[in-house]
Length: 84
Image (cartoon, rainbow, N blue to C red; front, side):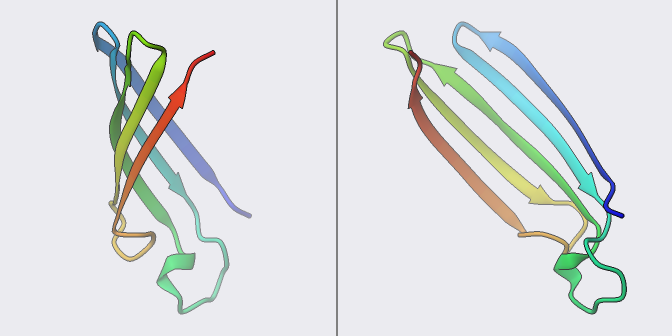
């Protein structure tokens, strides 16, 4: 059985700028496997969002593998969208 926990926090620090922190952990996907990336994972994501006056929103974050070899070492996330 797969167990998963997730916690996040977002704080508006200045006008359109919001900083975010996320913690994600889950148990092993499969029992009895020699593949590390199918085991337990613990991931910390740090990033933020900036809302421009024009309505465009820029999201950026970096995820770090806290439980080594259980997920990609570092992941960069960048998104651009327009609020309606």
